[in-house]
Amino acid sequence: MTAQMILSDRYQLLERLGTGGMAVVYRAHDRRLDRYVAIKILRENYSPDPAFQERFRQEARAAANLSHPNIVTVHDFGYDNGRLYIVMEYVPGTDLKSYLKRKGHFSVRETLSLMIQACAGVGYAHRAGIVHCDIKSQNFIITPDHRLKVTDFGIARALASIHPEEKSDVVWGSPQYFSPEQASGLAPSPASDVYSLGVVAFEMLTGQLPFQASSAEELARMHREDPPPPPSRYNPSIPPNLELVILKVLSKEPSARYRTADQFGRILVTLQNELYGKADDTQSDSQKTKISPAISQTNPPPFSTMPPPTVSIPPPSTQPTFTPIAAPHTADRSVFPQMDWITILLGLITILAVGGLIPLWIWVYFLYQ
Image (cartoon, rainbow, N blue to C red; front, top):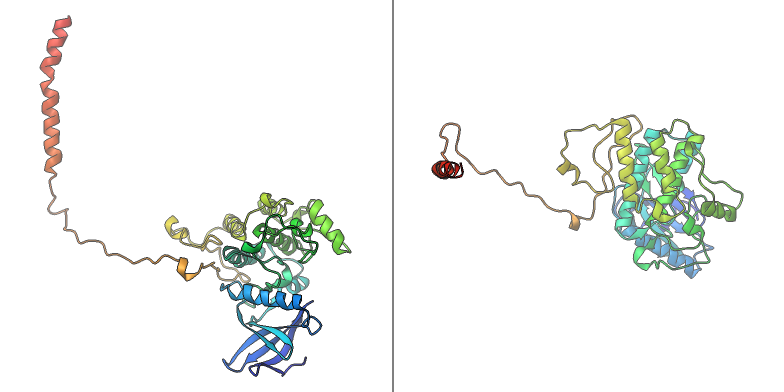
């Protein structure tokens, strides 16, 4: 397929953006709405396969239900001349893997900023009942203003469809990034995505993956059995508390990690505040609790490569509505103070009662003397 072709008499393909194992992504022009979009087209050799067609449809359905600033939005899904395609939000930028190849590794500050955004997007999917199952640096897009977008929900699973005891002979995911339970063919969970986020964080901080091998089988074994190396071995500037967090999310047992990306994100926000301070300490605790649990809105000091804060916003139906209420009008009590006669009366009764007992106490004293 070449550029300038038109799908469904609506989407004009302009240029190829990238290729993957299953599909090719193009930048296209939506002639009906006059906007640029990204279109993922299933490869021709996979198009006749019902299993790949269903997986492609599943990606469209999973992502179409997610609306979040850190997730690439899906606009449409179609079929034209034997080709399945997904129409997505066009995000200018490059994937995190390509960025790492050019940059080598990120600073601690940049890593925290981008990982907090990744946790916000993946955590939103977790709250929507979806496990991504294929978290890797290739599936994070970094925009020119350093915002992060999560993409490619091709093998995402709905939590409601996952049985805890299920076992599969086919392992889905990327061997460099998948969790030990995925490597064993066991059921994935939100903690599986947290493990993969930990692998991405390790890679961002050190410029290399925690496990490297020449075959997928050996990589799977290493994820299941070998302890991860401390990232400070490759980058001594990593703070010890951040290293402990990374090693925690790379635990072999899902129960030893943070359960969801939201929890992981909150820990990273706390570390960011500890390392670089809070920009606004005047914000009340009640205001802070209104922010989504995925990420706090307190901003670290700005720096050239750091994006504005990204807040995970739950669906509109779950957000409470607050109506300001004016304080009731009151008179100036400093000019005309009001006496509390009830309090004064009770005080007098107390004095009389206590005073009336004095003769009784004197009589009892002389009686026993």
